[in-house]
Amino acid sequence: MELKENVIYTADETKSLLKISQSTFLRLIKKGVLRAYKVGGQYRILGKEILHLVSPKLEEKATKAYRKVKDSVKKSLENV
Figure 1: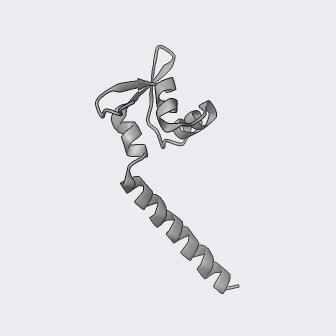
Figure 2 (figure 1 turned 90 degrees about the vertical axis):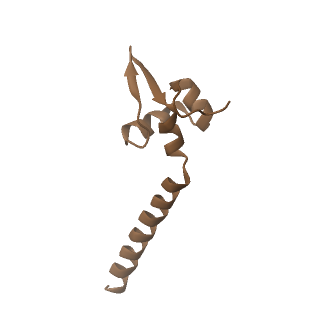
């Protein structure tokens, strides 16, 4: 299945594309990592939101955040 930026996907299609479970899908929405909209009690996700989730830029941000936390912990351990 090809992922298109301006197409609206259902929850099942999104889970299939990302190869994630229902609980992971709901967790991503709850934490704000994946933006979804409820329409008639069902989730709808814009393709660009899915692409944003798997983009390399997001990975860079996660790496920077990890390094920041790692350095912070390292400094606090040095002070002990």
